[in-house]
Length: 90
Image (cartoon, rainbow, N blue to C red):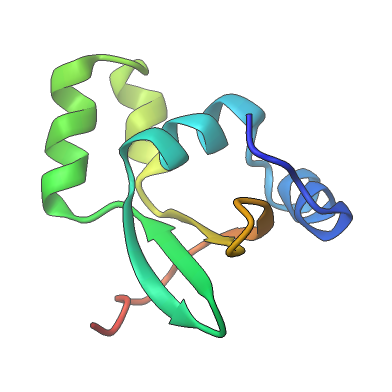
């Protein structure tokens, strides 16, 4: 598991995101630069299909997970996590 900042741990607890969900997000999610040497990790259409094919999570949990995102620092530490309610502009 990647390093988690204290802020990320607090946000995971507040937003109901489990460690298993975060691991699946980091394993299957798409990374795009977020500025300042950070990366945004989220699920797009291709990565959602890859997650479904792998059957790493039950379908009900995967549906809940696909709206999650994480900000990862340049050293690989998870800075924050959350749930998105809008599209991610690219």
